[in-house]
Length: 266
Image 1 (cartoon, rainbow, N blue to C red):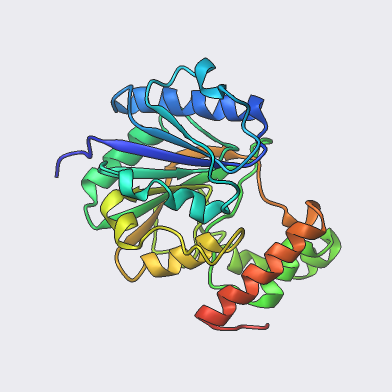
Image 2 (cartoon, rainbow, N blue to C red):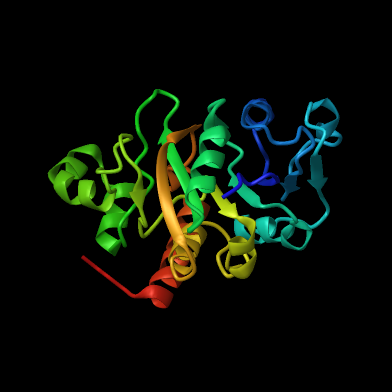
């Protein structure tokens, strides 16, 4: 099967760290070149608020398109704004704090060409300190989420075996893992046709769990692959450290997710 030839990217921002965002966009530019995609591949930057005026004028990405004026729609709805414009073979959903390694898209392109049944690819994710972030997961319970997101270190240690299973630590950077139940929205490389058939993210989730929901819905249509040759560096997460508003958003989205897909308490 021929390698996919056209790639689009979407990044939703809200009050972004522009220094970090520039690093992300530069890493994307380098990865596009390394993979042989067109230098003017469309890159949709969706401004949910706080992006400086004329930010795009200093960014060396000829395909950059900034979407403004719609207000803060939330993460998933922001991404969905560009659905009608997508005419690519592949579509990358990318966080504004996810830096691509130079060969990430090259490896991804080759993998998808060799595996036509794969409609969603997710990468090996490292933290800024080089530690592995275990972002592929099994279906969660309420206890799993509480331990992983909010428990102190000593308590997480007592439940280390349980968390290891939930976090699918067998996704250890050494082999491809097919069909993890839950994958992270910080980097989702879709076959565009699959993403459009799903109608993107469920707009009922303003923030948090939209990627959990989309992972489960995607599994009904396609195969999902964790591909460790595709690597990014990600500095996000940690809802518990972002204040009471984020805790409230997290709790509401968690309740919506479990109500839709099934409750597991422990």
